[in-house]
Structure formats: C-alpha cells, structure tokens
Length: 236
Image (cartoon, rainbow, N blue to C red; front, top):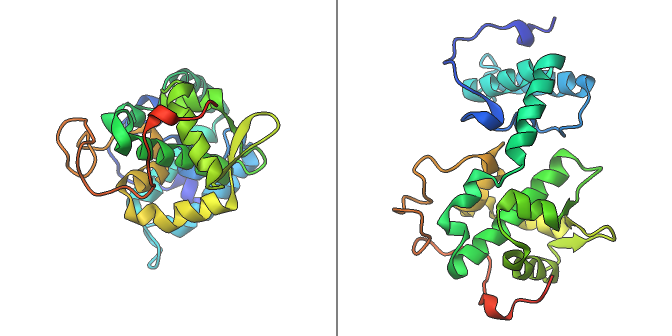
C-alpha cells in the first residue's frame, strides 16, 4: 500500500462532498466523474507527493487532507457508489453559490453570470477534456437560471469567442476563453472563488462577496467583463 494512503493525520470529523461543507471530491482530485480506479490512484499519488506536509517546497497540510479524504471515498468501490448517488441527487438542483443575489439582479449580476458560465466550462474542459461541452439545459440546471437569463450571457461569450456552440448544442470553452479566465482569475474574487476545487458547490463564508452586506450585489469593485442591458438580449 502506498505510504500516503495509510498515513494517519489528525483531522476534525466532518462531512465531505456534495452533502457537506467540503468541495466535490472529483474537483478536489481534478478528475472526471467517469475516471477509473487506476486514474484515481495515479492522480492521488502524484498530488499527495506534491502537497504532503513533509515536502519542504510545496507541502500544504490542508490541501493534503482534502486530497486524502477524496481518495479514501473514491478509491473504495462501495463508498464511491454511495457518494455518486448522493452527488447525483445534489446535482439535480442549482449550485448554492449561484443562489446569491450577486448573480441575479442588474448589470453587475450579468457580468457575474458570464464569469460563472466561464468557470463551469473551464472546469469541465480541464477535468474532462474528451467531453468539454455542457448543454444549455445543464447550464440552466447548474446555475439555477432559465435560459432567458442566459441568452445574453451566451451571446456575449460567443461574440467574444470565449465559447463555442457545437453541432450537438453543447457549449465549450475556447483557448481564448481559457486565456481570459487564467489571466483574470487573480483580479476577480468571483472568478477565483468559482475556480477553486469545488468552488461552485459552496457559498462564500460570509454569505456575500468582498464583505458586502446582505446578498445584493449593489456595490463593490468593478467586474472585469463589460455589460449591457438585458432588454435587447438575443434569443438563444
């Protein structure tokens, strides 16, 4: 058995994955939900070596423990099956982060929806490059918005050539879109939070962005994407 797999590290008991406070275990390991057990073991060994607390260069105890929790569940056939069942039920509703008003009302919310869609497509392409697309129906489900709210969003991202629409009607991130996300993630709290492993499954600790009170996105630093009114949004 790999030494990382049997390492005992004191850590608090807490729920993990889609039913608890932790990130999605597949996102933690950076793998597709379709990954086989060999891939799970290989990825964990590599990442555990990088973040093991004994590594003087890149060791990180918190990240290592998150990797370890994810591996313990996904490497066990019965626990993974149970986890996948729970995950599927949770996935039937919108991701909690998109319930914030920051994504709902006004010009600022439109910019946030673009960032949210870019993050979903970025994570999809990164974790499952053979299947990088997400359908509009799935985007509606994950973000909790009807397509009428997303039509202007998708039009803008296509016009900027950040996303493409495939023949099967799936949206996918382009290289230009990936460049934009990576170049701007450090400057946008919304984008950086959405891109952390499992970020789209969790609300900000304060329940708001950038210390703003309530759930409205009425103030704060400007967002990175230009916006326009929804009234002239093209049809999807």
